Image (spheres, rainbow, N blue to C red):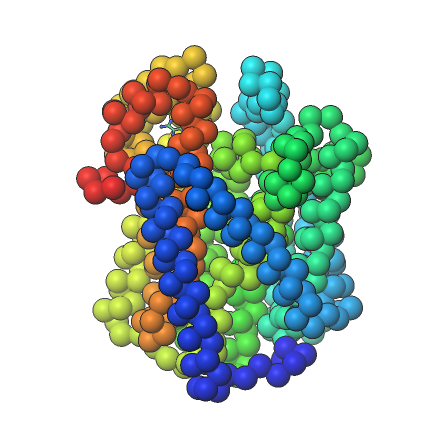
Length: 438
Ligand code: NDP
């Protein structure tokens, strides 16, 4: 299956659990550190050093993974074929073009520009699913192909992403508006351009990479693992179906309102470097499917109790309602500030740099959207149950770290942007993520 034999024996599982337990102690300390940083609002020096260390460890680990994982031309061709297919759909599928919100040039805060966004992701997503399933039924490939070539594909994606990041790094020397911080590693990690365009300037590489390859790939991996479960056991269990459906809804939702992404931090503020690119291409599809792997390998025919299944679905609905409601409200507010929020005119704090919304979801906590994401993360682990301790919840642990880190960075960024108005906002909306609690 993997090109090398994977050992799923109890002894090996125990060995890796021991290693993972140690890693989790380190992660727990890091999350505690992040939590303290969010509470104190300080960017402590020790944390800045740790942050760099974690970044370097991630980048080094990814390179090391490519030395360990098997390489095959097939894996590389499968990935490149898929990338080109998605790129062609992105470039040629007709769609509505959305105006982006004003973007600021690095170091020239008052010089703004905006881009246009080709939001044909929903069509691309549906066409890809039809192609993937159609090829299976017509006998061109089996949907379990990703599962069967998993390590080779992972390696190929990793290598191609690294190559793309080097390209982006060196491209910075030849384009306008590239950022040079004076620290090459930092430039490699965060990237040098906010919106690199390739193929003669017509192809927005960041916008494309944010959604198409990784998010659609995430759903394809899930489908492939479900097919593999069917091939191995003759059945597809409810936990497997639930994980597939939950992830599918999340990705479908992204594409239904793909234009909302134009007001997210990734599009407005993050440059396109290793952090975003590797996250989009490698981390999202391959790490977010951990629960699906567990369901397939740890106990492939296990079904959960009815009570647990109902709790799983309710947690998912709660998370989704908050996640969608908050992001929708913010997007509506940014694009139509005179619109209503929960049937009433929006309450705002006026600032010279754009207004801040303080009613609706955004009046309950400053980052209540992150609460939605965290509930979703828990619900995605729940189908895999509690039989492997925290392992099904590794995605939740990661999300907690990511969102606390994002919170801290965003708080500093907004403080710089809005100044005294941000303090006013913090007084008007005192809770950070969980209303009444934190
Ligand atoms: P937000 O959507 O919370 O964006 C924060 C930005 O919104 C701020 O920098 C500020 O930018 C603006 N803003 C903040 N508060 C207000 C307000 N009250 N009124 C008006 N504008 C405000 O964060 P993200 O972009 O990080 O997240 C978007 C979604 O994506 C979230 O739900 C997040 O959880 C999710 N996500 C999921 C990930 C995953 O891997 N599953 C990864 C990352 C995010 P401005 O300068 O425009 O004012």
